[in-house]
Image (cartoon, rainbow, N blue to C red; front, side, top):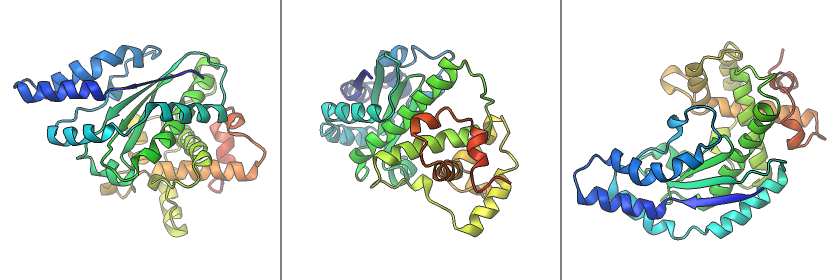
Length: 282
């Protein structure tokens, strides 16, 4: 797998300077300096608009200045070597170069800083965006993990949408959960010392109570429902990232019952079959 890593940190310096020197709307400056130079390449294989995946504007300039002083510690050569090693664990016959673009992430997002180690990723049809807050604890350890998760999404997507043309995929919440579960288990297999907070297990009583709600929407294709149950809505009694936890558990059950299945082979298995091998199927 060919991988090209691009950092936006030099562009961020230009954005910071421009934002401090004039009264222009920072969102416009962010678009000019941080999005426009990269977006066409990031989305070059996307079959439809991906604007909703654009990295959000960092508005607090003092925080960004502090972050940029830390970003110099990131070695793209070291990351490249780690990324290549990850791709060897899940090989593909896709010979297109994968673009990985690193963006700063607003320090004011305390949930990401404290619960996600300051690193979040997005797969964009064969390419990857990784947003990083270097003011978070141990953030460097989590960059390869997040890459592994998003890389799995790209390989999964290549298999189901490029090679299969979407045949057999229905766009249900069950499929969404299981896709995320596969990506996390793959990443965890490579980084067993890292324990994502979003995959924390529930106790038996809480798991049973929550599953009663989840099972009602397993085959929903409503995107709002997907977002609510995957990422959580604590006002509605849905814990943060509940869908990730259930997805990982379902996939782990399948792999425990099918110990000889590799992660590459698992990508071919339909979500319903994986679900039927889990503790939740009845």
